[in-house]
Length: 329
Image 1: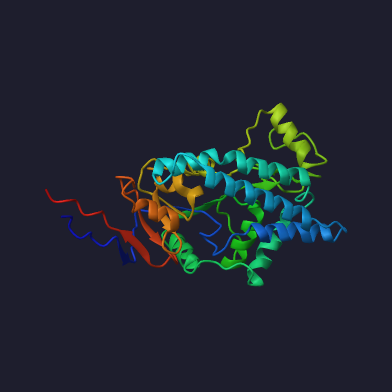
Image 2: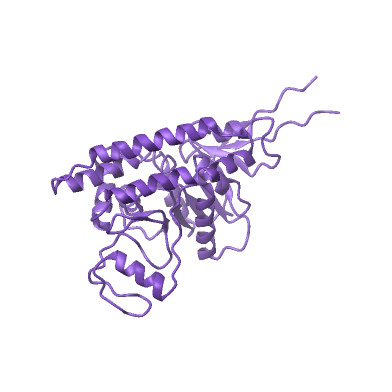
């Protein structure tokens, strides 16, 4: 007869001073809801001012993605109720994500929107109450800064500068925290993050930071120059768990961390699964009940190692997972 299992969860408010570096996912981690529609609404409003209506274009892009994603999930084999299975499914989902990004790129929906406009849209979403921030986020940032720690964001969002606008409005201050996310250039092409260069800014007066060539008439010309002349590497768009893991590792390298217990990662979804379970960080699951990931952890096929051992619904009460009780011989 099996003994009664130990409680899986207990509530605590840890003040773990070991952690000095903190990495957050954005959508549904810092925020309470997904921001894709808000970002699309920003682009639609921008083009409406020029008598161009992208409402139907966006709806078709969204509907096509939703249908492809649903078909992929429902038809995926083998089943993915293990950690390895979820990671494999996430990585194989990249083709679906890239096809959707290519549709966005071809549509021109994000073309002509500069950094300032994206930031303003993010701030306005907070001011108008269209975007809710998870309870306790400001307090955890205050705590990080109190202990002279640092923090950053890794996100698959469409707009890094929208994120920046949200954070600056909510926190009430300019931030210099690194944000590794996608950003459209002036031509509306969605690009992944790249160290030393921020996509989405106006380059009509900008010169190459490597050789002072320029000014360039557009961001695309600057990108072409960097690729062809200086062999600069731009990260692919962040879409799936492995791309987020690569971005997180770049951020950890930037911070020059050389231990395994200085960094914490907060995430909510399967796109965060590889970051949450990476041995370089302490993974903290965010969201009501932990959703699919917590269910997987508690399944008989869940991982033996408890690297993701806690979750939070509000950044205040951290729920610590208890190891399963061993069967008595």
